[in-house]
Image (cartoon, rainbow, N blue to C red; front, side, top):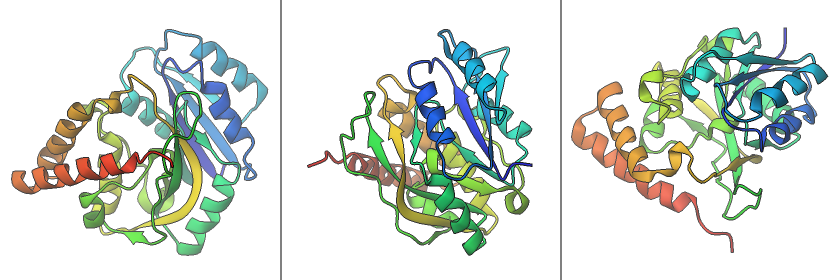
Amino acid sequence: MPKVSVIMPAYNAALYLEESVNTLLKQSFQDWELLLVDDCSKDETAKIAKELESQDKRIHFIQKEKNSGSADTRNQGIKLAKGEYIAFLDADDLWEPDFLEIMIPFMEKNNSPFSFSSYRIIDENGYEFCEPFIVETKTFTYRNLLFYNRVGLLTAIFHVPSVGKKYFDPSLKSLRDDYALWLDILREGRVAYANSAVLARYRVRRGAATSNKKKVMLAHFRMLKNREKLNPLFAFLLTIIHGFMGIRKYRIKS
């Protein structure tokens, strides 16, 4: 039984997939499995994934029969996960070599059901074009997270024995489904433990679903109003706050 199950959805990720998987292979903490799920890519993603699987028995490649978006793709990986902890690494994002070595003991020390860390922001070529996204080393409640989602998917880890297997909501069409999952975990009174260490690199790609700010803001408002059952005016206020904080997030590096 692996200590950590890493969920990696992939769609047309041939350009970055090997680099992302290599940051997992280079982890100083080695007790993991990778569930690499291809969402019917049209490029060489599946071929590269199969080659990577053949090189390391901890890598498990799953080929979907129908394209259904990142939420369902991650869910298929979660269903098959055997680890005590579940972590997420997209096929174009990167972990620092000590990500798991720092985060797993951090969670065990704090008896944390859910944790995340700070991370760098890079462009398609790997250039760090703005300041890192820093979170404070402290705990966050459901209400804290309502006001601003500080959790970067690529740094999120949850403890299965404490939380159970939690799944992304496919009805959100892969927009704000990660944020909804974090709220699901915390809604029952749990707290998230944040680690301010900068332990990952988030890649911003042109044409990504989350690059359409207007679309994301609308999805954010609807998720808070319809799924979280918040008063529409309060949901609108929170959406404006998120939008403002989102602009601040991408501060150009001096």
